[in-house]
Length: 420
Picture: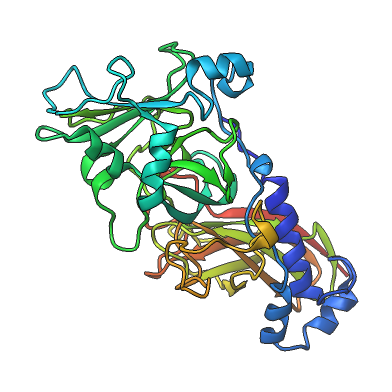
């Protein structure tokens, strides 16, 4: 699987906010080093306030990076066919059934055949009382760049599970979406029943998602309804949701399990460069910026390190824990959240936000954060440039989980030449 490029929307928003960070509003482009030098004399507080004055943060639906499968892709079918197979809100239905291969006991199986499968009208009825909204970055565990940042809305999965009235012998939830009914194309995932029914402290619920950034979920994004697992990588958030199966099987049935992936992993904390010059002149501050994906471990720092090319590093320190890392500035939350939201304003009752519409803490887990810094007094030469995160427990990326199977978060390296 190839790495998806950073979405155009994320890159555009990032470059705009960090341009303001470095240059102040109305100043010249990012390469204007004299403006950077002038900016460096001003206070951080003033710079940060202006940098976020009208920054956008959320990714428009059409600008999300996309990982998808299916031939043809379900949302590319004709409107008539989509209505027939239940991929429009008017005809969508969700079955919640016991696994016929196990002894899970379910009093009220919800099936199309019985006529009691959950339809979109029924989902909206549940939403009147149970709907939740929260921020989440969508990210693939095998790709280096986040796919997009969104405000997702839906009904907790548990509220729908309880409609089926399970009683005993339920250990996992299997689920899949519409993939042309071809077993080879079906994409499946699963969860422990405990995670479906109860949220760890500080985490959001797993939801049947029907809106992104206040707009109905498009077919390309997995609509009309997809699973949305807030603490996990994207393969858990199955698109075009169609069937939920309650099982006593203790083993997962995820499609990704066959791809040698860790299918139980939380999202990791890591960072990536967005801007750094390939060349710069000696004697001027060098602007470097990036994005941090905030995983289960939280985020306390984003850091950079510039090292002369060819300078050997001890083999017993493969993650550069003893390197002279430099702290970057993590930019605060925006005033304009952007995306598809009217006037860039968040709706009320977003999870872990105050009544005034401010995040209870920042950066928030399972979101992104922008960061920026200036490299100063760099002598002429060729350099390797690295970036990493430090989580809330002091773990430097890629620790505490350095294995690719559960998330691609290796320390990123770039190169830069400083000319005399």
